[in-house]
Amino acid sequence: MVSAFQIALATGAVIGGLLLDTAGISSAFFVASGVCVAGAVVAVVFRARDTFRPSASAAPHQP
Image 1 (cartoon, rainbow, N blue to C red):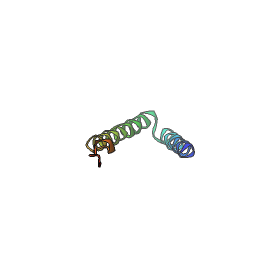
Image 2: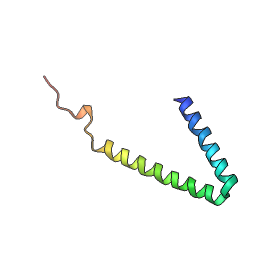
Image 3: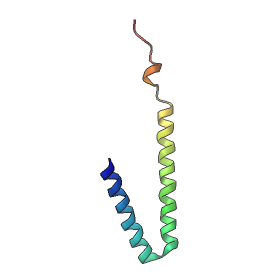
Image 4: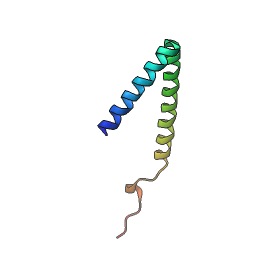
């Protein structure tokens, strides 16, 4: 899990650095805001999906 986080962080740094070098700071912030919005949408969708899923404790108990 930690290595996946480190790889994602390094990949984001490389992509952001390349974008900053080629297109400027405003495009880097624009892309970052798009990624943040996409992440928020994914979080809301997965949260809504988990909200409507019955939990194991709500299942009827067998005698």
